[in-house]
Amino acid sequence: MRVSAKTDYALRAVAELAAAGGGPVKREAMSTAQNIPPKFLENILGDLRQARLVRSQRGAEGGYWLAKPAEEITVADVMRAVDGPLVGIRGERPEDVAYAGAAESLQQVWIALRANLRAVVEEVTIADLASGKLPADVKRLARDPEAWRTR
Image (tube, rainbow, N blue to C red; front, side, top):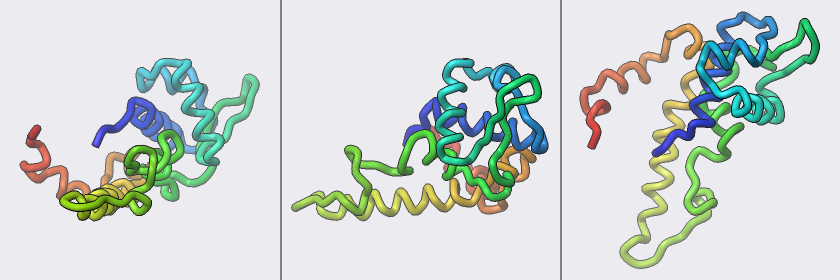
C-alpha cells in the first residue's frame, strides 16, 4: 500500500491544528511547522473543509481549526477526505470487483486488506497523533520486528 503525499501532508496539518488547542492557525504557520508546500497545503485544506473536518475564517484573526474535536476525527477520515476510499481496485471498491478462474479468491484478499487497514487507521485519532499517545494495539503492531522488514 502506498500513502500519497497528499494524505501524509493532510495528516500532518490536522495534527498541527489539534496541537494548537482549538484556536485558529494560519496556513503559513502550518506550512512552516510541517514543511508542507504552501500551495499544496491550500488545496489539502480545501478538501478537508469540503469534508467538514476543518473550518476556516478569513482576516487578521482568521485561520484554520478542526471542525470537531480531534478525538472524533480518525486517520481514516482524513485519508478518505483527501484521497477517497481506503482501498480501490482500478477505481472500484473491493466488493464491486469480480474475478474468474485461478484469481477468483483475489477479491477476498482485497477485502481482508481493507479490513486490516481499517483496524489501524480507524482506531487512531488525530488527538492520538497530536499527543503522541497511540492506541496499544497500534504500538504493539509497530513494535513487531516483522513490521520493520522492507520485504
